Length: 244
Image 1: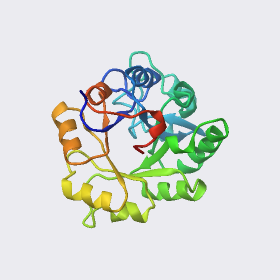
Image 2 (image 1 turned 45 degrees about the vertical axis):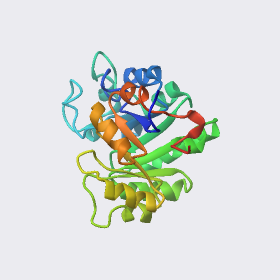
Image 3 (image 1 turned 120 degrees about the vertical axis):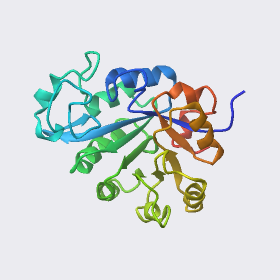
Image 4 (image 1 turned 135 degrees about the vertical axis):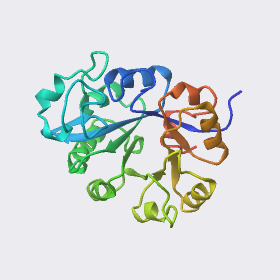
C-alpha cells in the first residue's frame, strides 16, 4: 500500500537514468509514469534551448558559456550518449500535454520568449493549469506574471530567508522551491499558512523522500522518479499541480 500523497517532479527528466535535459531523459520520465517533468531553459541565438549550466563542459563535449554560442554549434554537441541539446518546442512536442511541465528560466531575457511559446501551446490545447514557470531569477518571474498573469510561478531559493516564505507570496507565486539542505518544518508551515505549495529540490535518497513527506512538503524534484512513484500516491493528471 502506498503512503500519503507526495508529488513526483522528474528533475531534468529522469536524469538518474539518462543524460539530463535531453529527449532521452524526458522520454524515460514519461515511461516511468511521472505526471510532472521539469526542464531548464536558456534563450540562445533566438531559440529556447534546454540546458542547466552556464557553461557547456560538464554535460557536453563543447566549451564556453552557452549564451555566447550559436544554435548551430549547440546542436552539433554531444549532450550524453549521443543526445543533442533539445529545444523547448521539442520537449513540449514529446510530452504532448500528457504531463504537467515545469519550465525553469535559467538565463536573462528568457521570460518573454517563454511567454510567447506558452501562449501558442495553450492555443493548441494545453491546459494553462498544467504549467509551472520557476526561476532563481525572481525578476524574470515578475515578467512572466505580467505577460501571462494567471500562469503558475514557482520561486526557487538556495537558503531560507529571514521572513520565511513572505517573499514568494509578494511575488504572487503558486509555489516556493527550497533545497533539501536548507528546508525545515518551520519554513513549510509558514509557506502553507500563506497558501503556497512547497516543492523541494535535490531529493533523491529514499530516506530523504520519506522525511520530506513527513514534514509536509507537497512534492519533490528527484532524479529517480520511480523512488517516489513506488511509495507515494500521485492522483492523476487532472490534479495538475497538487490540487488533490
